[in-house]
Image 1 (cartoon, one colour):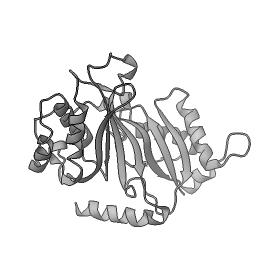
Image 2 (spheres, rainbow, N blue to C red):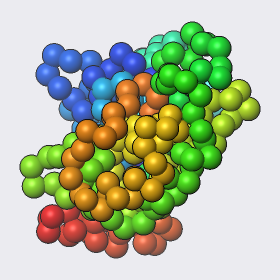
Image 3 (cartoon, rainbow, N blue to C red):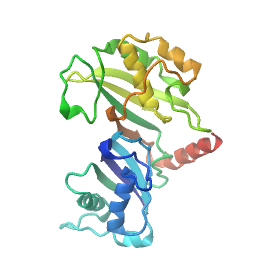
Image 4 (spheres, rainbow, N blue to C red):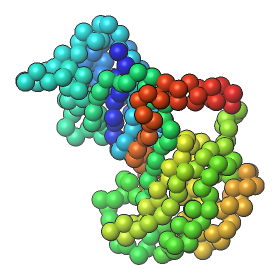
Length: 279
């Protein structure tokens, strides 16, 4: 049986998603909780591996259960709750009421579902507070601060100029033999009701530190250090640059992962695997 898990976490005190020996990670924490309930050695496959300090409100993972683990899927609450959906409640019980990671929902995955390879897009939000706002210590874990007052209209124009299928090497940290070609589906900036600048960034996938590079470049535009048109030129140069700073992880949250209709999941996963193998 393959199950889908919808997950959220505050990344402040995690060393990223991926399990690492001797370090506290989201994957390691959740797998340990699941092992206490179902036994065995559970291994979660995630839609997007977030870096240290990055948060998630809409992370998705899948887990394949063996026969013994399936046999331990028994509801623990009164009323005969569905044993699969009840697993979310049991995991939350192990993690504790004030945990910095949680599982909102567990469901039986449709045929062909793969949390990583079947995803068609990921959406992130990045929050920046400029000096038009009084410092709010309650926001410090999920919002980056910037000096001066930022021009959100200039940032929005610069962001929108980057949308499309391009090589984003200028905005990524290079990894050996990894492509930096991505389709940026949406990129825009607004101020929320509190006055915080929020970037909406949606792409088919992201290379390492791509979102934080993109928003760092836009903040440089908003502060007047770069012209809005410079961002597209830097992108087209496809070379790592020091023209802007990569912003801190704390402002970044994975908000949503998109999947095709159930009958297209298997084909999408095969297509993505084939493309990754070619890369």
